[in-house]
Image 1 (cartoon, rainbow, N blue to C red):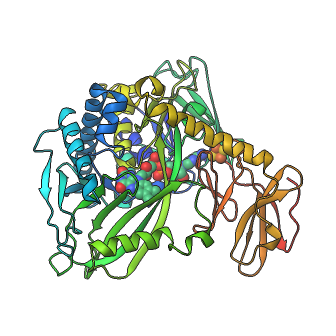
Image 2 (cartoon, rainbow, N blue to C red):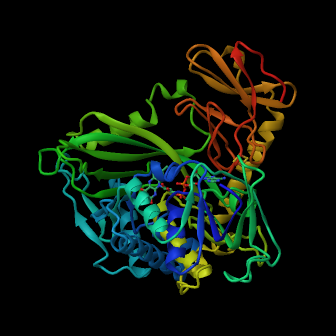
Image 3 (cartoon, rainbow, N blue to C red):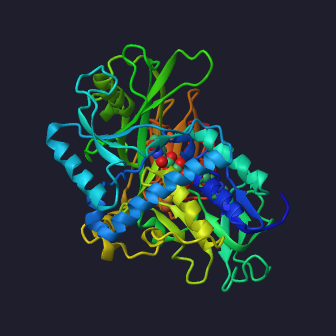
Length: 538
Ligand SMILES: Cc1cc2nc3c(=O)[nH]c(=O)nc-3n(C[C@H](O)[C@H](O)[C@H](O)COP(=O)(O)OP(=O)(O)OC[C@H]3O[C@@H](n4cnc5c(N)ncnc54)[C@H](O)[C@@H]3O)c2cc1C
Ligand code: FES
């Protein structure tokens, strides 16, 4: 890549960046370039279960309480518009990604929680959903009937599913067909905005909205003439106006082979999710469309915990791993399920008031043209479509949806959400503080000299430094900085995934120190390598 200019530069090649990029091209933006640090779909987009649902994870009752009735109605309208955008885009661009409408069932795991469903239905109706869009359905009580032993549930008819990687590959192809440029393996290190930049729209070359530096080619300059879009899940900057408003959570998924539709014990072709906050689960039947496939896969997700708060492996042994617990939960409901076929986890970002952060970035100041798409709340595919609609309006001149304001990242969360957001914001702020304090005060975390093969940990290096260590099967130690390059929080080792997680804003590094999840833009500094080598000072 040489020095490069485009009217809009989008950073991040996940579902959000690709939806925004395509929407901007369709809105008539002359040139859009997308920079992706790894490969298209390599982030959390490749880890989704791709339920496309009209219900919002935080629940309509809670959102109506915290945001007020008019904004709850805006959120329902936005969700339905996002689902319609996805369906129309798949059709218009001819994306072969198995997009289909399927029944979506919201259910309670215990009779005591069934009154929550009554409340959700009432809240959905007051927010504008018609009986044709959500109503009761009896899924049949009996375990083994394909419905997971779920009795009465709320049926959301606008629910859909998609094969996520086929969808993003199709979006990428459609974006390029319209003239969009994609550069993979191109990680953004920093960017600089310019006062008054980008105000000339697409015609004026100067002053540009932003100039961007790349991690692996620092001499090159990428220029965003009219606007810069950050679609890196958590924005690749140090903007606490965003980072302090959301927290990173790790969510787990297990896949079980199940009989094909029509065979005894086959689950219904549907999506399910639970209304119970404490034991939240989500389930989808993924039909294996490959020729000759003899089974489908039941995807079961949940067991969420704050990133970097994973219990140590030894504590988990008694109750099994998160994947074991998900499997046991699923087998009790779908006893026809066969062998485990998949197990993975990924990060979702929970905004303090439960609503996505999509719009002009508050930290870059008035008149600075940096647009962010973040705060997926586990519903990143519809949040990405919201991003497409809002970016097309804000940057491409398309009509602004009536609901745009509820997603404004600069909104006063506390004013709108007195019960939810104040504790939420305090909580997210405390996560940063905890991580920073831990990095200064905790004298020793792991005795890295005692680590055995296949183990990792974060320990003390000298008086104040931290070292992240991993010991390979042959005894070779990799020693890295134990401090997150984003804003300096001390990392923790996640033995289940064999990665180093940051407790503050969800950055994640593999055991070689390579950044696999931002907002950090750098890898961990290498301290040393070698059998039994001493931890060096940072
Ligand atoms: C287990 C799990 C289950 C989920 N289930 C659902 C579901 O059922 N339905 C749903 O809608 N959502 C679901 N989600 C959420 C959804 O997957 C995510 O919200 C969504 O994929 C986020 O998309 P994104 O494009 O914002 O981020 P990502 O997919 O993470 O993409 C960001 C991209 O930016 C790149 N990047 C980062 N930093 C830089 C940089 N400095 N320079 C260049 N590139 C950079 C990354 O490499 C990455 O490819 C789930 C998530 C998980 C983890
Ligand atoms: S992700 Fe922000 S300090 Fe680590």
